[in-house]
Length: 338
Image 1 (cartoon, helix red, strand yellow):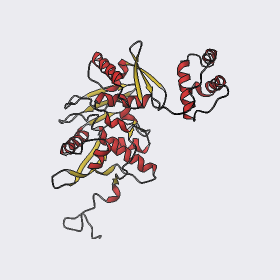
Image 2 (cartoon, helix red, strand yellow):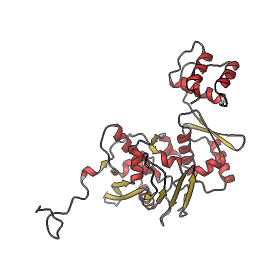
Image 3 (cartoon, one colour):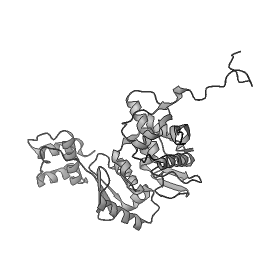
Image 4 (cartoon, one colour):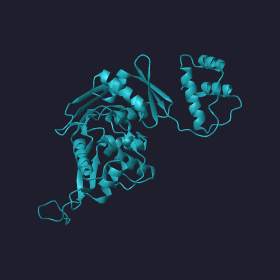
């Protein structure tokens, strides 16, 4: 019989936490990454006070119920921890490294990477965030990694302070992500965020940025009704208050990469802001060319097609065009309908 047995007093206890089971977060400049599931649907609370309401949400076949703990539902600012973990894992995967859903991280690095205060209060708030993330329970049929299951889980399975300073602050922490979130990482169902996301103060600004990044992405334009945006944001404010908040957001223009504006019929337009680049201006198109484009793509918004084509032209290095009108119509024939 082996010397290491399970009988009382016989041999050694099993190594419950071998180093190989951990992924060490050591990529300081990892690009911020967010998972598509929680960008698309309102998992996190936008409240600045403990939110103990049960959230029930259904949209296009996806059903989600989020049950908070006595400490309240995890907030959009608590999500910084998950973004940091997902960013580290994705950077490691892209570098060909082995990853695990249990991560070993330095609290100070997490605070710095997410633009948080590194004072004593910053560490205390970080601990509260871990508690809310672990205590918030989700039941959903939302698929991750191509797997659709209806089950309940926490945003993180567990967390533990591994080492403290003499003053009691956490120095290093282990956190185990849910299988649901880890599957999203392995499937690379993530999008890169602007680092300025962590500079957004208001919870609603962060949520609207997530939705803009998910739905507008690198397209020049996305249009959505105020009612749909209200539902997808997870805001609990009345629609009229939500609309007023959007108007203030439009005026302040703090969202990185995107610009909001109002359109008729209670619609919001999200447009991607493009950094100014030296070179020729966007090609001018003859009005007759727009009419020809309408014939090639019946029912399409021809001005949206022009915007997409100009974005493609910029992304390909602003090549010099001998005949911009012919080039545009050729693009419409080839991919403008897609």
